[in-house]
Amino acid sequence: MINVSDLSPRLRSVANWGVIILSVLICLLMLPTRLPGTELFGIRPNWLLIWVVAWSVKRTVFQGAIAGLALGLIWDGMTASYPSHALSLTLVGILTARLQKQRYIQEDFISIALIVFGMTILAQTITALQYSFHGVRTLEEIWANHQQIIFPSALLSSLWAPVIYYPLNRWWQYLHRLEQSS
Image 1 (tube, rainbow, N blue to C red):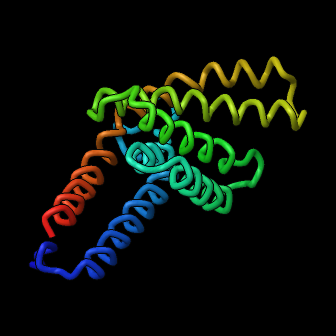
Image 2: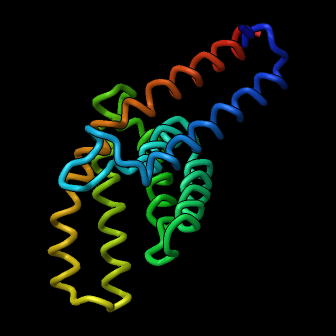
């Protein structure tokens, strides 16, 4: 087993990028997967939104925006490009980083779950607004569908947030402690 503390700073950085890429790939693979216990009324957690929140809570606004934009574009590439997920995930990254900078939150499971809950509502609302601007369906149909999706999605995403947040946060704290001690 490789001891990360014995690695050079450059190799630690490579290991960190490996963890980041692997965690994003896992979230991407979870998007279309229907695992027992992860669905409520046919609605699944927003794994990429959870990842963007976990990333952005300890990063700058710019880093949060870039992460949201990148993951949103990847998601758009996996699905139809309309409505765009890039817009909502970018805004989630920006707002989450701003929350951290303003010190409105303490970092623990409950606050992360609340942030994910609120950001899921925001992201779903942005998606509904994009549908309403497109004009394929009536506004009443869009908002009725939105009301059926928004709370189960926010609830599931917030309940599953620790599954993504906890290991990533522990890893980043460990790397930070190694940097401080060297």
